[in-house]
Picture 1 (cartoon, rainbow, N blue to C red):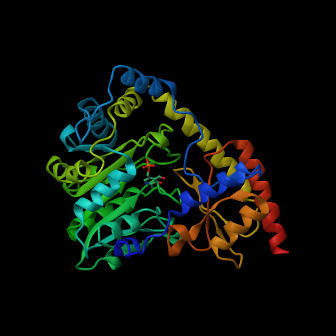
Picture 2 (tube, rainbow, N blue to C red):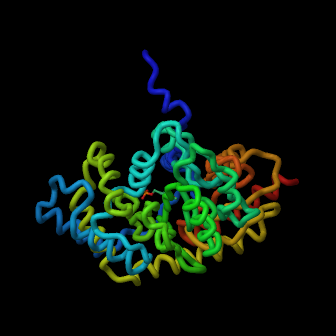
Picture 3 (tube, rainbow, N blue to C red):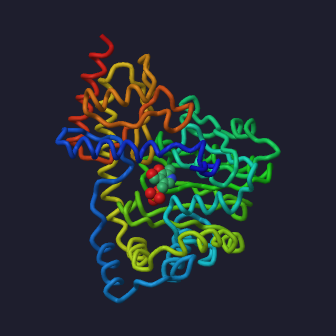
Length: 388
Ligand SMILES: Cc1ncc(COP(=O)(O)O)c(C=O)c1O
């Protein structure tokens, strides 16, 4: 058979998706696996959101809609972006798309083949593959625990070349749960503006925040025109399976980026978008309740880590992950595999998030407190036995 496209060569299967499938397979076989590997809230989607989608389906909203999204949702999003994020975007600058696809639209629409896309290391697993798909070169920028997992202006400066076109940042972050300070964000914005780059700000965890305030770099002076801000419903409203999110940009830029959507997925389903309107316009207490529970789980898991020898944790200020460094003489994929097969606990190897993630593991606490207690006891016993 003739070979597939060269652009697929550097891309492996998504490590997080692969691990999830393995855990499901073990559970199907009846094994008592505790999973700290999924980046998915375990709460049901709030009922008023489900009801809005059902109502729209019953009303026959089952046809194509406008590629950039239905007016009701684009208006609700633009209003939210202005009010909560200080981002001066108009409904015309909003493109409704699954969050992951919104990031893909930005990279495909902003970066030419051969140009470079910078992103944090450790960082989310899909930024580099998306750069490859665009024919661009992904360039990791170290943002490890020496800077509290914040990407600094100095590290950014050092990574820029004449071919650099865009930087992707993610605060609150996956995998470390770090939240960039105002100084860090200001420093990044200054470099991005000075070096005439685009900024893609992945803010999917904006509401899963325990300390500090969320900052949208597009609200900083002079940044709006060069920033594509990406948000999503998945984590905030426990809507991972609905595939709903958005990007916000200056309207003439959004008009260009939407071409990628028009010729790939056409649009996001209209009845799903009506659920999005209900989510944004519904009670804020729903989100607060979930975040309070995540905070309690974070505190519980932090306490549990205190008795795991050789695991060094930074307390995450946002998202729902711990990213401890360990001092065992094992690669992170080896340790994760042994934890899964021998202790029946699934975690994600840190190396999946970049070179700087080696000798770390990612623990998601988007699971019950009971699972956290049980799973962490297994981790503690396993690590203690291993160190003997
Ligand atoms: C940092 C980050 N960005 C984007 C996404 C994609 O979100 P969605 O599943 O809503 O497309 C995720 C999902 O895990 C994520 O962790």
